[in-house]
Length: 228
Image 1 (cartoon, rainbow, N blue to C red):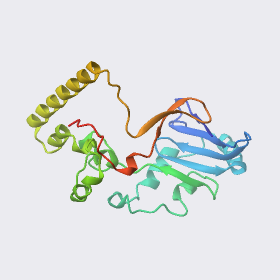
Image 2 (image 1 turned 135 degrees about the vertical axis):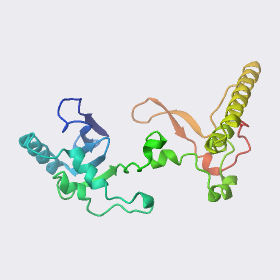
Image 3 (image 1 turned 45 degrees about the horizontal axis):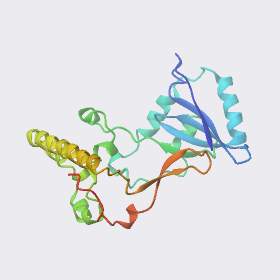
Image 4 (image 1 turned 90 degrees about the vertical axis):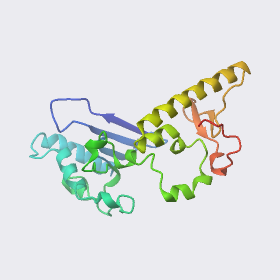
């Protein structure tokens, strides 16, 4: 398991967004250290080196001229956002040196820089902007997608095409259809059952969780409801 401590807000910009933690084994032994900033990057560090690193951080105090956030921003600025999918993670992340991390630290995750025009799109990330994208390749794959896929939602599609009036009409139609379906299910005492997830007890915690039943990957859409 992982135990992560999110640093509370303080007047120090060095602690802003910072997190530290550990990967804990089944015998409650600390296996790896976790360090980073939840807005920028997360790193895994050898446990002995991590303890020494934290002590050095405390010893250094506020002596750094540039904040870790600024250092991370510098290291991500060189990423080519036009080739995000194709770009490989470097063997040695330059951020390790910028943050004085131990040499064998592993980059678990790092954010992708915002696009230059992100402010025009509610500061969405590239991933968020493309969630409803519908390319020619996607159209060829349509039979492999369930009819309930949100990319087929007609009101959002009209909105993306710039047709505000039709989008509003479609939204109203969908809402009325949803209400009618709910009334019909209540009348027949039909209970909704998720197609691709099952409610089970977690083997470790005992809590109820929704777990994939793998039926989605069978790609049999015969029992999908007509929601659009």
